Image 1 (cartoon, rainbow over the protein chains, first blue to last red):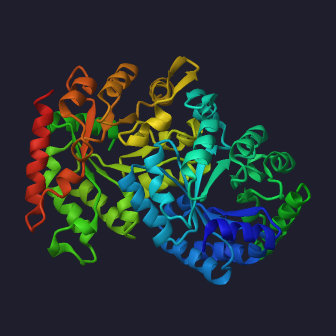
Image 2 (cartoon, each protein chain N blue to C red):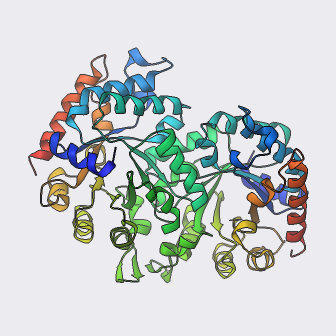
Image 3 (tube, one colour):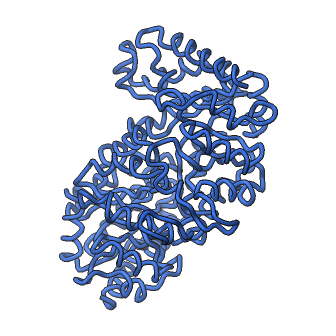
Length: 274
Length: 274
């Protein structure tokens, strides 16, 4: 699967910009799953199967699996998505960032071991720390740019003397990725929904580059403002992530039905603004 | 184990500033280990047992284990270090960085699952992305500041308008960690040996804060310049990392002896400049 091709096809064919984030927290699982050795896989599989026709991609967050010693369940989950929903790209949310020789190992982890179609990467260590992911030209490389958390401003919003002039650090990251790192056309950026003005600025700097937008739902971002700021001319260009609001919509045996209902409402609320 | 207490004790009692980085690459293993299911553990255990009396800490790089589906061997390795060399702190080199709720999961991974005494963390997402690690007051939190790779300058060396005035981004990170994030006294910084002038500047900004210094050996950093720039008044303050030059010093069944010899030479070369 070529990530960018599959993403564009999913935007059109599913008529959806929704990305469901898979952040499995066993403490929040329905009672009937608690204590089962494969609870993480079963929980996520049920969410995936209930929502796949409503999404443009899935985004498992590796920290939730690693904290539970459940890498094997993450492997099984991604295998299941590829087998049961083959047109649905999978972004491994890992936010890796390290020197080239180590980044090569992380790229093996993400793309060969876990078989993800894309990965999130931290830009703080610069170009050669990103090259090993870019070398997989059919995989997506989604760089952190302007994150949705309160501390996102601590570094990203500083005014810097960039080679192209004075700008905020996140603008320098957006420009650098768009003009330099994206030679194979496989880059995207993370821009939080809590900052629509910055989504608009990133869209201005990056043309039609796909933007992964966390922060709606639990984090308080506004759907209308996000769409107005970030959609491309054809009404796509965004992967709008929702995790907790969908995953934990229900607490009973019908949790997947409850998740589907919230996913459907979220997709439709997004589409109403396209 | 309290990381900072253990590190200071190891500096004194071992008379060493050397950190051995554990980056196990099976392609470089001696022939007699190749193909064994526990080769990664056996390789690293032999290195650890041959060098523990020469180091102030060990630093396993998690990417090398994750790429090989060998998290279980990393768990076993850190358990072995705690059991066989209980005064030797273990830094998990993971360079994690994510929003608070996800960072909590990564902190569980590093400190509870893998039982590391410290972790490396990326500062790009700001304060609340670091708080969940800082909340473990007995654990070390070592923030990326000025990294040793060529692309390290892409962001870190930009001139920024920081709240405290105009400075380079890495200087803002060093100041912020020293003056704000280090309330529990459990922070350190990563500063590459390839930039001695910046080590000196970070030392100036951070008092006696421990600096993890990669980049000697394979990456070309200079030991004398590193020591002159970074040692504290009592001749410590540094964890000088060497990985490949020690791990792959020998190719035969005596690889651990060869590793010990290089580790001893490196420790002594460092001590000659203290």
